[in-house]
Image (cartoon, rainbow, N blue to C red; front, side, top):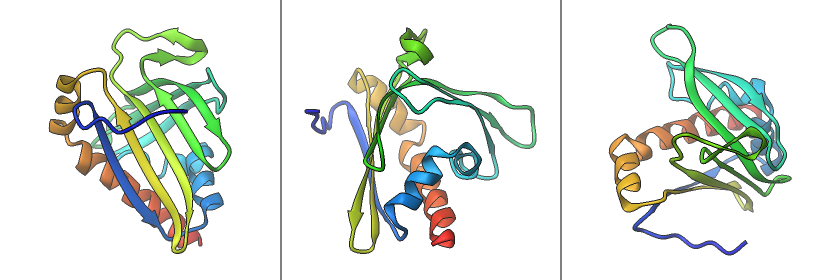
Length: 158
């Protein structure tokens, strides 16, 4: 897959997680583990559907301030390469159905690193305006926080 970082339309976060790649992958692909880190605490996440195959649905809900669960992400997996890469987009929903309000395509890369796992989230937008909006919405704080929560979860598990 040929892709490069476009500073006009893309955002990226990279982190070294001090846990084996298989452990980080497991936290990403097992709904019960995924729910523990996907949204910034104290908000809670519920996985409605996680069909880890191309075209598979990826649907989550969020509960903030102890309220009821509300729509969070309704997306479609494009690529799931075991322990290497997950690509999803909310431009499509499960079964390749076009979405009403496309916003991102995210490429999550997992790589071996001497200290554990190199984790990169590369988030692509259709325009500079969407990128700027996502950044203003708190991309770095939000995605940074959840990657930190992921690290805390898997580093504790070793």
